[in-house]
Figure 1 (spheres, rainbow, N blue to C red):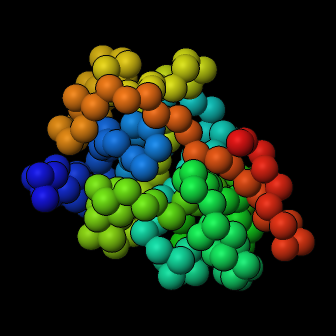
Figure 2: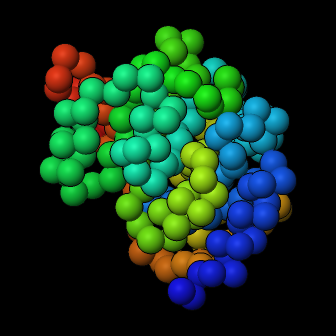
Amino acid sequence: MEFETDILNCLRVLQSGGLILYPSDTIWGIGCDATNSEAVKKVYQLKKRPDQKSMIILVDSEKEISEYISQPDLEIFNYLKSVKKPTTVIYQGVVGLAAELINDDGTVAIRICKKEFCNQLVERFGRPIVSTSANISGDPFPKNFSEISAEIKSGVDYVVQYRQDDNSVSEPSTLIKWEKGKPIILRP
């Protein structure tokens, strides 16, 4: 794996409550341990983002969702297997995540990451990781690494080297809410 050094450096930073800048399975993101309130607060500060605006959480498997969501509808997993684009689901019944990540209505947005780098990182970390776009709140999200501001790059504890030279255009995940056994698409 060409990204092994990046994974090890990210793990060290995540375990110490720091922030990473990394290529998620969609766009470049700012990440931290999603169970660490102090780390989550650092992300809000870096992004200059109101803390009532939620952030996406990445997990590596359906099993991990079951550890942080009290009673997920198992039909969601069948739906996720049928879609091609990375899809984030808004879940009810959050357990064990930093309180700052939970919306006023008790929901949180979680995505099972499928790309190898992210999946390895989350799996080896053993806990969910925050994934929020690598931009100051209100600015456009970066379509690739070259569009990330110096302020964001210098505001994290580690910048992943892997995929920095990839100039393909990335876009955010589809966002859905699951209601009565059906997906309600909030962001295509």
